[in-house]
Structure formats: C-alpha cells, structure tokens
Image (cartoon, rainbow, N blue to C red):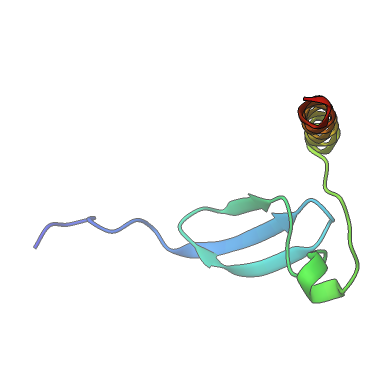
Length: 80
C-alpha cells in the first residue's frame, strides 16, 4: 500500500457569518460558512436576508423590470 495516501484528519472549526463556531474534525483546519443552523430561516422560523454584494437588491430590480415589461405587453395586447 502507498504511504501517506490519505490527508491528515485534524480538529477543525466551522465558522459562520453570524459568529457561531462549531468544533469538529476535518481535513481543513478552518471552514467558513455563509449561513448555519443557528441563523438559517428554516431552523429559526424567522426570515432574514443575507445580502452578499447587493444581490438581493439587484434581483428585486430585475424582477420589477420584468413585471413592468409584462404589464406593458399585456396592455398593448389588450389594445389590439
């Protein structure tokens, strides 16, 4: 068998953006998460927007443009 085939399995920390730290074992010493079970809306029962670089705002602007275009197309179709 080959020597040193498997990576080193060591104690690790899982860090969430909310500040929650979980101790576990992994091949990486630190794992960074954007959302965990302490702040995820499914587990907490509350809605929370995790906005990374304004993505939620960009999405809402795109949706508003799409809805406006659909409404304009619908009124144009009714006139004909």
